[in-house]
Amino acid sequence: MKKMIFLVGLNLLWLSCQQSPSENNTDAQLIQKAQKIHLKTTTLDTHDDINVKNFTDSINYSQDTDTQVNLPKMESGALDVAWFIVYTGQGDLNEEGYKKAADNAQAKFDAIHRLVKEYAPNKIGLATSSKDVDSLNRLGKKVAMIGVENAYPLGEDLNEVKRYFDQGARYMSLAHNGHNQFSDSNTGEFDNTAKHNGISELGKKVIDSMNYYGIMVDISHPSKEAIRQTIARSKAPIIASHSGARALSDHPRNLDDEQLQWVKESGGVVQAVALANFVNKEKHTQYRAAIKTLEDPSDESALAQIKKAHPPVNVSDFVDHIDYIKNKIGIDHVGISSDFDGGGGIEGWEDASKTFNVTLEMVKRGYTEEEIAKIWSGNLLRVLDETSEVAKELQKGD
Picture 1: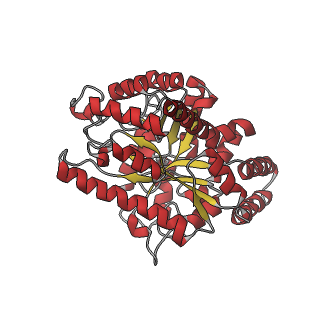
Picture 2 (picture 1 turned 90 degrees about the vertical axis):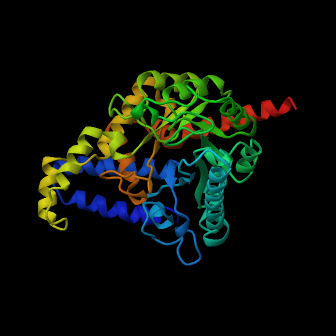
Picture 3 (picture 1 turned 135 degrees about the horizontal axis):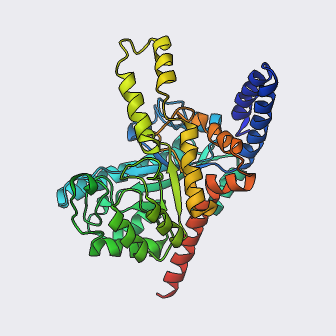
């Protein structure tokens, strides 16, 4: 039942291919093959931002809200697992700033728990392990998981790490856009600044605590030196929850070849991100500049001409990053994220309802069913399991 809506949509797409001659017969065969793989695979997106305004009695994700991710869109695109993000922007490094940030983070934790406990308990459940994911899938439910973007709300209280773990957090980044009490940010590259020349002593303790409880360490936003020091410090594999290959799009949020190798050596995974500027900065810049020349944004004919002359970043460009990372560090170290409702979305994967197009593009490129399963969820869940095992070993020493 959970993928019935997806099947209806795919059947319509398949029929449209049948209406054309021979070359579309090949397209139809690819679609059928990709459909079978997509239905069998646990599809997992590691980064979906949320707004607490969409988690109320009257407006919530059980409805087709004006968001890129919600339950109807997940059902339509057969997206099984969404990591909902407890994000906090960087603020002042003082008690007042920490308190404001903590309140923001708690509101998002509470919102996610309301979704799975009150608004749609029969449709989605909270998972904190790969076993939970499997169990919820067997029940025909969608899966919510929780990641924390920016450890800033912890303040200077390491006890908060356990409290976040107890509320379901299973990955956390030390920093976001701006240096904080734990780590330097990638944004220091823009103004050539650093606060700690990597991570602080408190940051090291937070990593230790995350290892101890079983929270994956996310390196998507810290500076390069902070990433190096984080990987050296962590006893568990690390993840980049939403980053691309810098060789393909030169942005500080992406990882260069050296950083990719560090991730591989840690046993971790890079979750390639479908945010246009990170996928292909040059192409995206040209497209946005062309769009600004439109006198009437509703003029579909003029828009079509612009897209023909300056194509927007699309699913093919995105899968280029998967190809690149796979070729550089191996099939076991690459995954998928969208950054939906936080700036993500590209032509062909505009929202969760279009998730199948990513699988289709991988099938077109010759990826096997086993490889696609690893990329969509297997690699990330392996790292989660290994992080949990590290935690168990560390706790044995108590």
